[in-house]
Length: 120
Image (tube, rainbow, N blue to C red):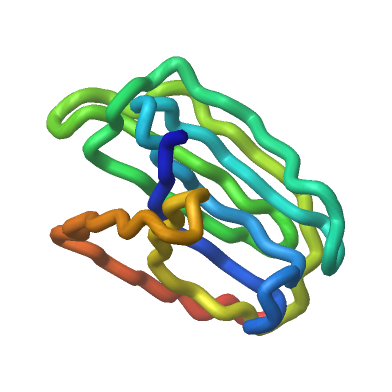
C-alpha cells in the first residue's frame, strides 16, 4: 500500500479534525483532500499532474486552493474547496504510511510560508 505526504491546514490538533491538504501519494497521484467536520469522511479532487515538484495551498477567506506543477512549468488547473476551518488554523507538513508498522521517509525542500494581512 502507498503512503502519502503533503501540506495540511487543520481546525485543531485532534487526529480526526476538520482539515484540508495537498497530498502527493506514493503512486505519483497529486490531490486536494478535505474533511468538513471532525470524524467526517475524507473527500478528494485529483489533478492530472503526476509527481508534482511544486505544491501550493492558498487560503482566501473560506476558500482553499491547490495549485501544483513541475518545476519551471506552468501550474495545472486549480482545485478549490470552500471549507470553514475558523479564523485560525494549524499549518504543517505531514507524512503518512497507511501501514502502522511501516515507516515512510520524505525530504521536504524549499518550504515557504507567506502571510498577507487583510484589512476590513
